[in-house]
Image (cartoon, rainbow, N blue to C red):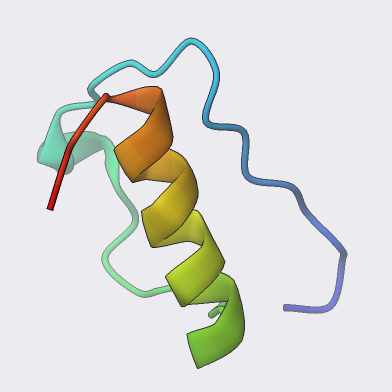
Length: 48
């Protein structure tokens, strides 16, 4: 992804999959995905 972006885990909403682009516009590395997983677990009160 050329531009920087942000992921917010506050005020989560669901989005119909049909609204997504057919091709990905970027990616996040494993470290960021791990941190995102932890943040989502906290935001959604999920216990592993």
